[in-house]
Image (tube, rainbow, N blue to C red; front, top):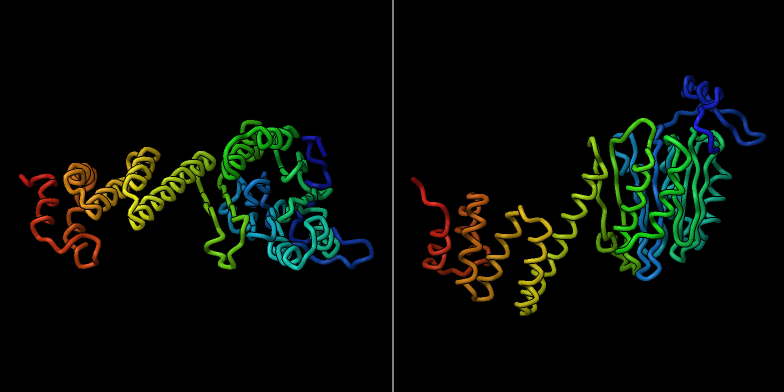
Amino acid sequence: MNSTKIPATVLLFLASIALSTFPAPGAEPEPFFGRPVHTFSIVARDAETGELGVAVQSHWFSVGPLVPWAEAGVGAVATQSFVEPSYGAKGLALMRDGKSAPEALAALLAQDQHSDVRQVAMIDAKGQVQAHTGAHCIPAAGHHVGKNYSVQANLMADASVWPAMADAFEKAQGDLAERLLAALDAAQRQGGDIRGRQSAAILVVSGKPTGQAWKDRVLDLRVEDHPDPLVELRRIVALWRAYRIENLGDDAVTENRPEDALRHYAEAERLVPGNDEFVFWHAVALVSLKRVDEAIPIFAKCFRMNPSWLVLVRRLPAAGLLPQDPPLIERIVAAGPRER
């Protein structure tokens, strides 16, 4: 498992992938058509919040739709190597029906004629976790199961990748998303995928299911094709955090908590300082709080960043987002750059 030399049998397998097969004992051979989503990933549960998550990077286009699967209150799955995506949906279904993650994984492996080329990890809502690395996954390939997590990798530069991921996850601070990203970063520092890098994804679901999947999906972000997908993934995770904080500001305005609203808006702008969207709605919120004098210089800042917002100002009164007050609207517009 730990050798970095690819055996001749595996090379032969790759050369004849469309015809090769690894049948279960006693089964008739069937043609095997595989998608070689060789990669490194982590499945994990946050013991405090109950959140479940999966994060992955691969030298494969758009890894997000294939490898990570998760459902609030049920479990999470990473399915990779010569990937069989049905491990995701079927694994979650089995855990939803009451099987533990180890039981669900064992049941699916027993039905898979090509389990020798699969790499799969599952964790359930109780934190029970299990992983499988098939004997014909391309070296370096292996996994490590820890408390509330599993890390797994195949076709790596060397066998130090998954131990480094485990160590990074256990030592990382912050929420589950931050700890998942720390594991991916550690894998890349060890050399990662021997072919390089291309795409990445992160999926986190709530620890308390609401029965509404769109609410239970805390974080679901993908980098489909990028020369440095983990850097890009961290960038959009930071943007996601900023938008969550911006939404808290909007909620505070609705609940007439102006100081909380302003604090949230300031924090969102600090996280993503070049985002004119945040600046504009911050100013609009100040108007709704009848703090127009504070709003005007913020509008001016936004208009300098992107003059297109000037057009939107005149449209907002009809939508009820700014007062039907023509002198006020003209005062706001006057804060924009003057035509020469």
